[in-house]
Structure formats: structure tokens, C-alpha cells
Length: 226
Ligand SMILES: [Zn+2]
Ligand SMILES: [Zn+2]
Image (cartoon, rainbow, N blue to C red; front, side, top):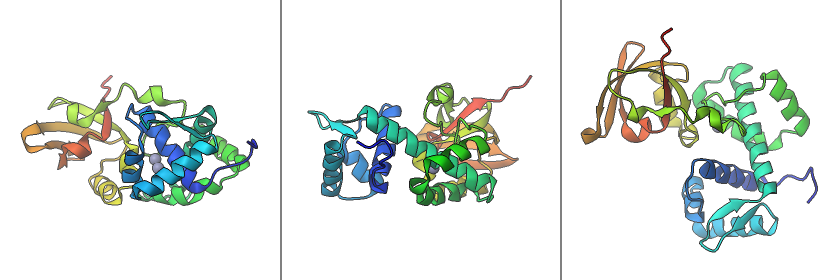
């Protein structure tokens, strides 16, 4: 395969998602991709077959999907391009956090290696995207984070990360934005109510009720008080 040859935007999207699912220790199978991309199972199967033929992935006996080393390299490239583009849209164009992901998604596939390199240095070698998700190679930096739904009541924490799976959910992101629940926000956990599937937190002096599903996608670190 030609060094400079890039797969189609669809294949790049698949590579990125396969990478992210594997990173999170989730089982990577076609059904999971069909659900995430909201496409039919036969469509996913056809795309995966092409990807396997082209050497991006290996489909195992149990239909588990793994990236080849070439697939891994390309997945890292597209994720890096996506995250650097998010930073550019955030810093240069001042787009709100809720709009970064979908706008970056339109641009990332066409970024040349030269522009990618330029962005990398202009954005000062970021380790995380504006939502706090790690760039490839910096996954270890988020391992110590806690899911907000696991934090003991009374604890004051700082929001560090809004998981990738929420980035394309515009309504959820706008809600978090409106409530000031952005990376860097100081949050006090007031009450955790598993029987009600909710967590009550205080951010910016305002009480916010979050569903456990949403709170499990928000990651925090304790506030350092020294
Ligand atoms: Zn994104
Ligand atoms: Zn992001």
C-alpha cells in the first residue's frame, strides 16, 4: 500500500471508532458499529469486508474486529487530525464546545499531512481534545480519572473529560454547556441516587440533576486544594 494513500472518509470513521472501542476495552463487532453509525448490518458487513481486503482490519473467528498495524496507524492519524481540527475551531474561530465535533468531522478527512503538522505545533502539541479526550499516545493520562457517577457525595471535583460517545450528541452537549459543565468546571457532588438513576451536582452555584447514563460519561479528578 502506498504510504500516502488514505482510505475513504467512511473507512476513516470506522477506523477511528474501532480504535476508540478497543481502547475502552469494549468488544468490537459489526453490530456495535451499525448502532453507532446508524446504518444497516449489511452495509457494515460490506464495508468491513472491504477494509479487511485492503489490510486495515482483521476479522476473527468470533467476528471480533482488530486493527492491523497499518489500520492502527491510520486510526491514530484520523483521530489526531480530528482533535487538532477541534482545537483550531475552538481557539481560532471560537466555536462553542457543542459544535466542535460535528464541524471538525467535515474537515478532518481532507487535512494534508503538512497542515496536520502545522496545526500540531500551532495548537502547542495538545494531549487532549477540547472535550478532554486523549490524543493517541496519551491514553494513560486519563486512566486516573473517576466517572462522575462513582464520586462520593460531598466531594468537590474538577470536570476533565466528556467522553467521545457524547461528542456527537448535540442536545446532551448543549445541555452540559448551558449548565456550565465544561472541562475545567468545579463541581460539588451533592447526592448520588442509584434508586432514581440520577446524580445531583452543584456547578457555578446552580444545582443540576444528571442521569446516571450521562454522569458515567463525564470524568473528573478531585479538586487540588493546596
Ligand atoms: Zn470530536
Ligand atoms: Zn473532542
